[in-house]
Image (cartoon, rainbow, N blue to C red; front, side, top):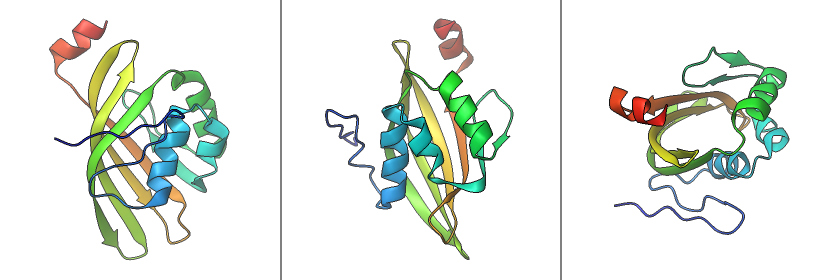
Length: 136
């Protein structure tokens, strides 16, 4: 079982199999609702693909979405793996998200370019229909 390490400022300090500081910074800033700092990690044409919503491209769209939809959500990435594909580094990460007293299993796919900027964050909910009905 992986231990999720959080300190008082919601800093993510241990994701088994992941060592890239950009990934840790992304989750820490997201958990602290520092959305302007989160979007600075993205490339100008980066994408955010949230669950149950359309794909968002560019820092403006991503910021607007985060400010509206991500307040109060805490991400707890637990483990992942890294793959190098040419100049891109891809991360497959599993963990949980806490929202309104509920915990959901999540998968994240994050892709960084050679400038260490986020090209894509894809977030997938891993839940049963029963889990979703309980949330409603």
